[in-house]
Each structure stands twice: as structure tokens, then as C-alpha cells.
Length: 102
Figure: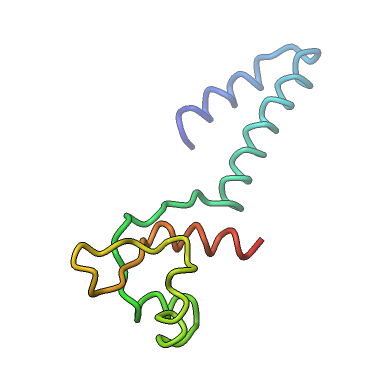
């Protein structure tokens, strides 16, 4: 058993009976927080990088042609310095997908 739990166990054995309900409430709070963390693990965002048309089409389940034709409407488009290639922000795409699934 973990050392921190051993101290809680010894405290449970030593506490007067009138203090046990409060102690049990504190233990229940720990249990609820631990269960919440298991049920909803934290989201670690991907590092932002530039995506090409093929990658965006795959993630959106669209054709490449559609992405080319509607690229200017996507809020996650990035301006390419040469103006020849379309690039998109991966963090912007993640945010766009998160908003569209609500």
C-alpha cells in the first residue's frame, strides 16, 4: 500500500467515531477526483505544424479538389511566402474540428 494511504489507514483506526463521517467525506472526494481523471484523461494538443492539402483532405474526409476550391473559406489557412503552395495550421484544424463536432 502507498505510504500516503498507510497514513490515512492509521488515521482511520485512531480517529474518534464522531470524526469518521468527515474523514470518509474527504476520502470520497479523493476517490471522485481520481475517477474523474480516469474517465476524462487530459488532452495533449499536437504541436502546431503546417499541413499540405492532402493531409487536410484526409483529416476532413474530403477530396483534395474540394480543399483546393474552398481553401480560402477555411479559418486555419496559412499564407505561404512564395504564394505557390497552400498550407494549413494543424492547431487551427484541430480547433476547427473540435468546434464543428459540438
